[in-house]
Length: 149
Image (cartoon, rainbow, N blue to C red; front, side, top):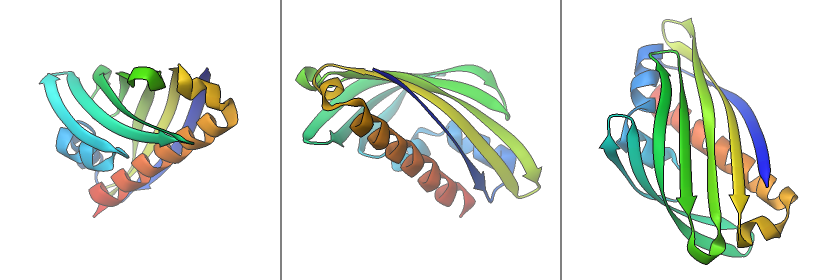
């Protein structure tokens, strides 16, 4: 089951600071809902463990995240894939773009695509779509608060 989520967040920080934070595993770990661990495995790769609850199913996903199409400090693509055992799998990515609005203001836009399968996919597209939108929204609003602080 595939879905697309788009959104934007205005962050009260200079574009370079926002870019740095988007590439900092410690910042990302604090912002990803349910993230238990996030470690750099290569210049463009991270290993993650995330616990998610979708409807009645709670699962731990172990996965890998790769950063591609890096165009500092303006854009990149983040791609990931996680396996949640019997709960299923989730894979997807997001194109993230930064636009300088002023010396201390940056517009972050994202267009995310996700694909889920297994037991979680059987919960129905409405529940998965609403949960995915909620998680994406939580991530970017938390990110905006932390970086803009």
